[in-house]
Image (cartoon, rainbow, N blue to C red; front, side, top):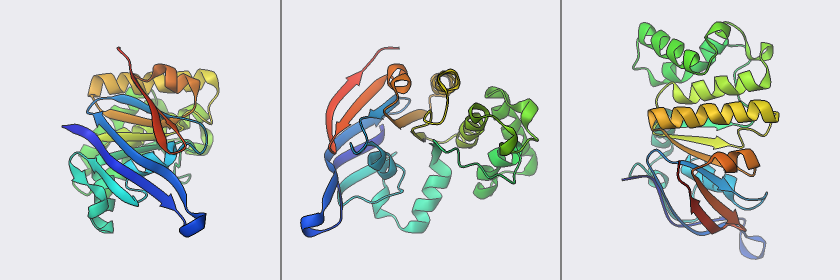
Length: 230
């Protein structure tokens, strides 16, 4: 079973003569445990495609199935539940809540799920913070952290609920090369150990070099699909 299956996907913005086709008949299957990057220049459609997979946007035509669920055919409430339970998001701007501590930011997705006790949440948060090397900073707030540390918090927040798929939009864009490489190595190690599917949207050479699959987009179409060993 593919983690993500995209069939004849088209996305248009606007209507009539001013319509812009952001995605044009995309067909793609991403298997469970892949470490895949959607690569291409600005305007290629990579972020739009990532948003479609995350049910943050809706297709003009075609299908996006995530773990066999056609996310465009479920109502807004069920889409929100699906994102909360099955998907993890990592953004280039981190999107941390500034008034919450590191611990509270990572715990927040678990509180939304409403199925874990306080002890269970504490155990999960401590474990993932240890895995990303931030346990000693659990009581700091985002403004007291470096960019690399904030991105590690964002990764921990995305992974703490053990999602089926993690979607990362330009996760290294605001990091220097040293922190960018460290973050990518961390995500790749977690991918290999936990078998979580990672899908990136990026034009960053560091991301593309570390991916085990590179799907290249141009003008809303797939123009290349390279799988690599290791």
